[in-house]
Image (tube, rainbow over all chains, first blue to last red):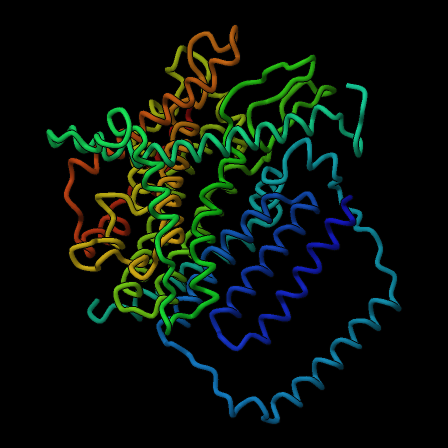
Length: 167
Length: 354
């Protein structure tokens, strides 16, 4: 049952990921990207990480993509038909091809072991995924968390300064 | 029950389908009759009668409206971006409805020896003896409500009309700003409850005959959440995106027939969702007197509270004039967000000492 569900979601994810780069209209590409994010969120749910799934939808699909769609809408980007046959296509496909082989090679040659941390599925189900993440962030990963907060604060201050003409 | 499918008893599936159908039909009927109720209530507040001709006191008005919209001509503007134009009403409508999957509307009832919690995305674990629901219920609702904005943005953009575009832009700017304030204001509730599961939040508000409701512990958060939600679903006094005096009817100017009806339904379904969420988080959910003895009273209390809040929405619409756009943004960013942050800090300090 779970495998079947996984296959369906994966199919949708791959098709929408391909549509992101093949759609002619940038808005439709953005919509496909949102669909891809949704499928990623579904994977998180299947991995017993509901908090990650909710945050994925909220932050990526809900906030970042709204900004992207906004920008595309306001700039009214139209597709340039002449650019279709440029050398970028050729170079890009070569790079993509090699990257694909590289990853496939690594995946087939190496042995991917089960992750063995202190957290098991039963423990996550009992204590709760959100609680565990919160505990880890505010104890073991406090310093990285604080540094990220400062980074975000700098970005916010920067945005205010850029947007405001008179301070 | 004897039969099992994929490791779960047959009763589980029957209960699930029944719960989904009941909730869906409840929201649909409420949406249909909320339009009627709104016209009636505003009518009486303005000393008019409201709809009177279709049926007894106009009771068949929603059906007549539905039939009218259904048979109207479907117009797609020739310069519109067709795919986005067609999909936008659906994107607006679906998040409004699927939010109801996580809202608990009653306690645990027992049917033929099988215990069923009255919440769509929940099940009763017999071995553990308690109800398990999705443990990020609130975040799920916030995530879904943040998706509703795509319907409005796409509708505004794809219609290829300046009024629609202006309406869409206003709507999305407003939605993003107020979503932030609404999200921040309910963090104070989580600090008190210590959980994100809606089932547990309701259970925590059950004591002291109603005085454990979070509205008494977090009055500021409750007020801010309700006001911000009104802004988020574009209700008066924040209905700038469809301000008919300046923007015709905003993002749905170019829509007709059933697609227009879908936007209309989405607006009212959002109103039901927001009321249900405020009830769940602040007004004790389905709690009320004698629910322990008669579990079926739970849904009655829940529906009564939801309808009361919807009445308040309509009351506000009949009373208050519309905000100006810059006042709206000022209120969101410079009043509600700082207040919500202060509320979080104060709750944290008090929570630390108690």
